[in-house]
Image (cartoon, rainbow, N blue to C red; front, top):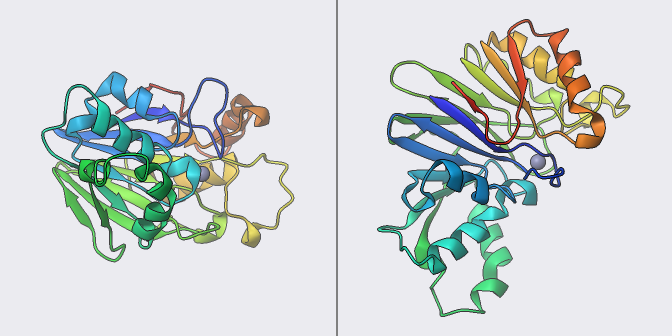
Length: 255
Ligand SMILES: [Zn+2]
């Protein structure tokens, strides 16, 4: 399984880098995880957006889903048409949320033109999905609207965990137990004064503690603000997790 970072910024783009967006590949299977703003343009460097096996959205905050609109637009207008609609998996309630967000844009074009480009479905977090070679499981996080951490497993046993956005109270260590790679959010500075149970985001050391508790092999820190000095966040995380750690820099691929 391979993870390619398409953007790793927190709630708004850092300089030259989009928000949450990742390409997960396992054999021939390709999933665009969280189509955050500014990540479709990076996805195109690595694969053909017309032939994705799926797009999966962890939650409906703008920084994790806005490029869904760009994807529908690209599929509708690109001179080279897609052979089939692209499957998009939304969290529970996501279809209605998206319908309200896209309605004004859809009114500007031929009826149904954008709608035909994707197959919208909502996942049931209680049941794992099978997408090509991947088994995809979900666990609720602690965030400001319903959000789902995601675990990808391929037949050879390799696995990848993604925290999406979560506060430390979620305690996802059992869900991520033994994953080869953990992609964890590190939004907050170590100096945060917000009480632990009231938070919907992690510090880098909390992400590292989750990696340690999950006995994961590698940690990639993501969803960071450039103003919080990500390199110092990385150093802080290294004091807590002894495995391989790196920042989710745009266009890196991690195996
Ligand atoms: Zn976010």
